[in-house]
Amino acid sequence: MRTPKLRHLAGLTAVLVIELAQLPGAHAAPVDEAATRHVVQPGESIQAAVDAAEPGDTIEIRPGTYRENLQISTDRLTLVGAGESTVLSPAEEPSANACGEAGHGICVTGTAEDPVSDVRIGSLKVTGFAKNGIWGSNTDRMTVRNTTTEDNGQQGMGQEMSTRGTFVDNVSRGNKQSGVFLANTIDAEGGATDAQGTLVAGNQLSGNRTGVVVRRLRDLSVEGNTITANCAGVFIVGDESTPRAGDLSVRNNSVYENNAYCEATDRLPFIQGAGIVLTGTEGTRVTGNQVNDNVGTSPMSGGIVLYTSVVGAPNAKNAISRNVMSGNKPADLADRDNGPDNTFTDNVCELSAPTGRC
Image (tube, rainbow, N blue to C red; front, side, top):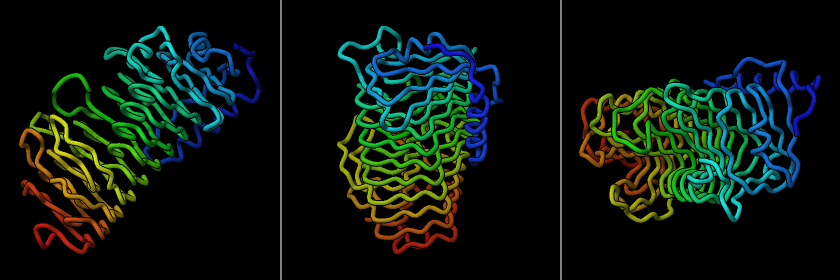
């Protein structure tokens, strides 16, 4: 599976880097002209190619179905398929690695002292895993692009304890939790951490519990996504911890008809008809979104909703501006916790609660 260095590889890698660099906020690593391309055919092991790869290498996965869990810890590794015809799904017995033990499809894993950096995943489908489809932990500049995550038991794709991630032009649908999930950490309480410009852009997110969840993070953007047919569109989640979650942007998204019903959990009431929800955050900018026809009777139902966090922390200093909302019920724009110093300017909507927010 390890092939000689190919003349066209540097050019191919350069094209990938240029495409990434053209995206707002995207992060592109330097081109490595000494890299090697590994080609994996149906019936061969992707993990074997990953284990043989060196930093800067590309693993090309030909169309077919591959039944394994992939564990990646090599810097500057590119994993690329041929679109949805390249499928990663579970085997009857999980792979004998940490990703298989965790029940995820693809794991990109570093350590706090040595994050794995510049791993790129693109143009494949990851489906049917018990936990997360694609999951990064202690990563820097991980990129997931043009990839489908579908029918996974928890998150479609996401990361924790990570910085400068890029999730662009993906499809994430039918996952039991979020289409895209970003958090400071999933295993402990604590204040928000700096995501250092992580970007979630241009994704199609449907049929999940929630389209995008951002939990206890700062400095990232959720922009230009199409989010529909979930129980909720976007959740920005904080609490009373210091520093507070926030200082991020939710802008230019299309969030409509997120009217599926999700039962209550031990931390949240049932969810239905929630467009964009801020809970316990500060300094978040919600700008230029189209939010339509999100309808439900949950306490968090409505178009754009500010709601007190599960521990009673209010939203503060958030700016809600230039959004266009219609057909959301019980309200297009609902300030349900009346936290301090939130501002509402130049929004277009039919009904706000309280009145005067648009």
